Image (cartoon, rainbow, N blue to C red):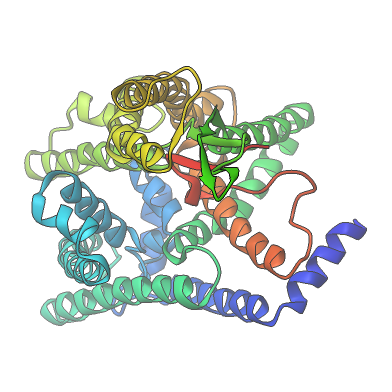
Length: 454
């Protein structure tokens, strides 16, 4: 406890770090405030009543979790930051497939990054307008959610402007946190929305288990949650270390090694991070759109679409698991380039013991990456479907989302990323780190890194 208090004092004593933390907290508070400001002409009580009437395992409830309740509140931040995330994913995928975007990302430096940022912002605006139209259509079809005395044209135009402005404002706040705050701003906005639902879900779960005299089950649930978080953290930070050696070079009459015997190549077990589950989740939202279209146009509910609209159904989780494994391999192949690291070792006059430089080194790194990606991909797939497993074991639907899925992976990744930045400030000022041994590794170490071995 004394060490914890001393660490907090050290953090507070660094003026730049203190200012960044306070700025971040201020922006997050403004973002949460916007989640309670209701759109004009919207009756949020009717909207929440309709939401409570839907199944607890409906995909719309999952969307509401990501927006911190703003979706069912009819708030100005109802779309949250998700349109920006979608635009970023599209631009990133274009960077792997389209030569023009490849040049912007790798060859044009700062000017290329600025163009990519502009393209992402413009694409965010277009996606927000499309999603905003769908959201307003949902409001109009919800009984009692829209004030009938309000002119429908005014309702549509004004709220489209407000929803679009809300998403653009959220994007701007995320960028400001990244520039002047601590941590990745966009990720923090997502995390704060997820955490906002945690106390309510936890209290509801405690009351439910106490009312049914299931105290032992509650204790088991909390213990299982702690172990899942620990396991996720270990896998996210897990690496396979490959020792490398540096050939000696002559400096004057002295043989000087250009590297140390402790240098290693760190292959991440889960190099793709949270991207596979985000891609898979985006695809699984498509049946929701098809389900709403079919049911609204023909009044017929397809059993298949109905099952895929249920995150706790068997076939939903089978497909979701498979998508996570596939995307883990695809994204790892996109971000990890063994040829690049083979050439780096050759330029550094370094080599992997027992492996010839050049093609053999490239093949060796590629083979190891493929092998260690399998357990990482399976783990991400299991985490993705874990909410359905614990829900089947008796945990409430709302609380089960925090046992895995996108929520847990985002929480772990963002917390590690933020703590890593705080630790770097402490180490630069000659303070101790946040942990006694080792160093916290966030998403900066994604893929392959080269550094000193422990």
